Amino acid sequence: MAYFVLPGRGKRVHRLAIARRIVDGTARGTRDRSAAGRARRRTRVLRRALRPSRRLQIGLGPWLRALPAQLPDPALTTVLSRLAPHVRAAYVLGRIEGLPRYEIRDQLIELGVRAPWSAIRAAEAVQVPAPRGADRFGPEALRPVRNRSVLPLAAVVVLTGGLVAAVVATGGGGPREASAHSLRLVAAAPDAWTRGARTLDAWPARGDLAGDRAFTRRAAGAWSAATGDRRAARGTARLLYAGRLDGTPLAVMRSGGLLARYTPGRLDVAAAGTDPSAPIALGGGRYLLAPWDTGPETLTGRPLAVSGGVTAPARARTGCGRGPLFHLGSRTFGDLGGPRATALAYRLPEDRPDGTGRPARLGPRGRGIWDRLACAAADPAKPVSEATASGFWSGELPYGGTSAEWVCTRLTYAAGGTGAQAALLGGEARPTGACDPGRPVSGTWWRAPSGRWYYLAAAGHGRVPHAAGLRRSTSWNGLLVGTGTPQAPVTLTAR
Image (cartoon, rainbow, N blue to C red; front, side, top):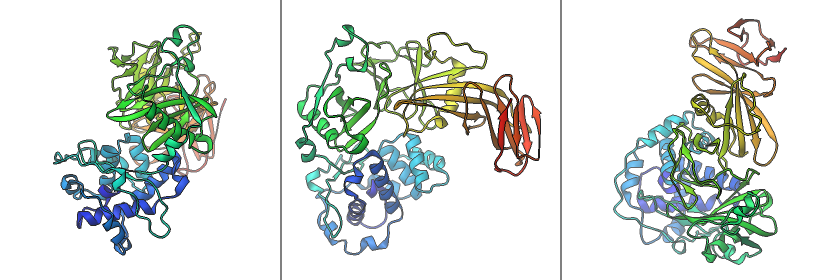
């Protein structure tokens, strides 16, 4: 990643040596092993690669002497060298690292990019020639250069994806994982779900590597070596999936309320939730279904192909990559950034509960709402198992504004607890703070097409919003419209 983000000037050997020096210099030992630690390290690598200090070229000899025999094909670097630095970073994050668009956006914002979506779109338009060869660097050829305070770490640079990609993976791989055997993986019988309760414990292990003891032992060892709140409970964990996804070995395990995804060199742990039927995200738009769910449908009602319990790729049609994905039984599932698909629902104010307590399948209007809402609905750091959006105002925004709808979304978190957030859906989804799904009221400062600022507020059926802190206000089609100092605090009530 560092090699391709670096400016494309100078000799390839110098760029690769500088890239390895950047990676060595960003190591923080055990702090890099958590998901948050890896994300912070990625940010450090990108910052140094985007704006490399000239001091990195001083004393470069140890890194030059440690170069592998083969160097990356120059085809990709030649194209990337013509791009703006942040477009180059967006390309590497998307095409090489394989991150979804919303993660690329978040990473670019972390790097201080003011227009992340412009960089992402420019990166997606880049065309590169086919590489002349698929070079692959093994870990034995890329041991880190130990220099002064640089900590030892295992590094792997892999050129993959038909684009010649360099990926540096560090942490507790190899011998450490193989030597940790305190966690034992178990799996339910293939027909366990037919003979008892349909729970997460009844999910059998699926995938073509489920019987590969060497691989599953490494996966268990990696989770045993995790620290803090990422660590599995002592004893046993459930193996849910072990197979190759786009050529990369992947294991999915569950221990108590935690779900772990392991690929060589990486372990991601998140809350599993309690829904026994929520599909598990495997990557690439594919989902592992509960063994009793066999008939998913696309959003247009066509059958979605399933093989070995794994769906064909299903991706949201939104710009950020989140949103509705497919129907499963009476529910619609979508991607809100968590390790499992989220059950999505939408209700109008006049809708009555159906008595089941479960969300109903999204209709055309509900899908349209969630297409606009999903990008602002949830934080991927807090996985959501169920989300129900309730509209409480709709109409035309004043002074030449577009049609819009105000919704209050109730979120059920996979780790336990609930929350509710309001959003005004106009030209884009504008989060407007916390709300009460039973008695919603929300307000926000809004800029009209004329450039003037107004304060807008709305409340649920039968209630009228009142705002203190405005110069004056009036009612517009059930909407409170006020003037005052833009972005000044406003006290909002409804009665």
